Length: 275
Image 1 (spheres, rainbow, N blue to C red):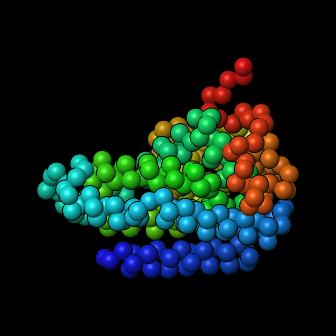
Image 2 (cartoon, rainbow, N blue to C red):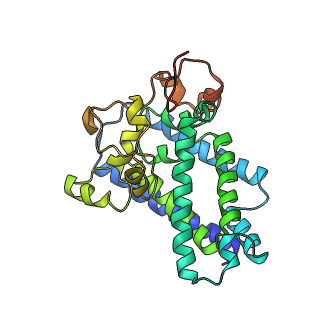
Image 3 (tube, rainbow, N blue to C red):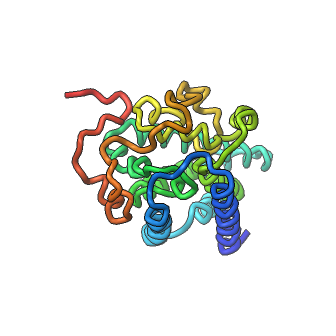
C-alpha cells in the first residue's frame, strides 16, 4: 500500500468513526454536558490540527513509512525469522497495544510526564473529542516510543496501519458520551475498552484516575491489576477532570498548551509522596 493511500484510508476511518460517535452522542447521550461544547470542540479539535502539523515538522516520515524502512533493511525481531505473516501482524498489533498501555501508565507514574499528560484529563466533560486531546510534546514523545517499538520488533507496515486505525477508532469510541445498555457493556468490555470502562479513568478521584489505562484492548488492566469496574459515585454522578484545573478558562486552546508549565499542587502521579 502506498503512503498516500494509507493516509486516505486512515482519514476515511477517522471521519467515519468520528461522525458515527458524534451522532450517537446527540441521540443517546450518557451524561449531560456541563461546559460550552463550542469552546471544547474548537480547542480539542484545534489541538488535533496542531499536533498533525507538529508531527509532520518533527518527523521525516509517518510510523507506517518508518515500518517500510525497517522491513526493507530486515531490522527488528520479527524480520530475523521466517514467520507466518498473519501471525506476525496479529502479534504486532497486540504488542503495540501493550506498549501503549505501558506508556500510558508511565505518563501517570513519572511526575514530569504527568504534567504533559494531565492536559488530557483537564477536560471537564467527556465526549468524542476528548480522545484526541493531547499536548504536542506528549504526542512527540509518544511517536518516539512507537517508532522504538516498531524498530525493536520489526513491526510490518500492515500491522502499523491496522493498529493506527484501531487506536484512533477505539479512542473516539471509548471517549464517547454514548449510552450502551448495561448488559451489552458488560460483555463488550471483555473484548474492547468501552466508554463506561474508560470514563472511570477521567474521574477527579486519584485512585480512579490511576486505573483503566487501556485504550483499545481491555486485557492489560485486568492482567496487571489496574482494572476498576465502576466509579464510586456512579457513571452519572462522577466528576470529570482533575482538581487543580476546574476553571472554564482551562478549556480554551491557549490555556491547554501552557498547562504543563503552570504551578500548582498536584497529587495525581502514581505513588506520589508528600514532602
